[in-house]
Image (cartoon, rainbow, N blue to C red):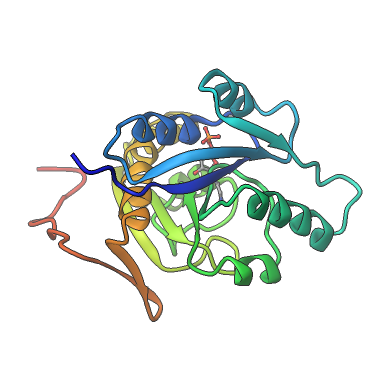
Length: 218
Ligand code: GAR
């Protein structure tokens, strides 16, 4: 079988790295169109760095402390270019990237966010979802634009909000959805099936989900 040309991906993290783990697991398949070539963290103690080391993936810590945003981003940019990175996946990377950096990597940065964007941008998402009484939430993988949690949407999953949910139980259900959607979105992007057209992403050969979900059912 002909080998697929795998895109070189850097995953940027700040914490535990469960989405990183999901991407590593997906990329273990020889037919996956991306390889995780680098895991970069702004926090030296991030649990995701241990996950990367355990998987034999190169790691790098670039601390943001005491640096102007532009200087921090320039350091990251140089590290990524040095290693021939094609695509960047933000996976719980809790730093806002400068417009200069985002523009330099236009359409080559993905982010996962634990809500159905454009609803519930920012932090403390699950608390706000419960307080607002919405019946569905979910997760989004989108192409990064300079504004926080904004940009063309590659893929989303809907997750029901249950009456007895706490922010923790809801976060766990949404996180499981993130772990399914992020590998899918990266595969679509790395293979070229997902393309940014104007302000939207068009996915070649996508089959539309039929019907509707109702929560609560019945
Ligand atoms: C994930 O829930 C991700 O959606 C969220 O941080 C968590 C990281 O978990 N990101 C954001 O809120 C970005 N706006 P992980 O380190 O286990 O992947």
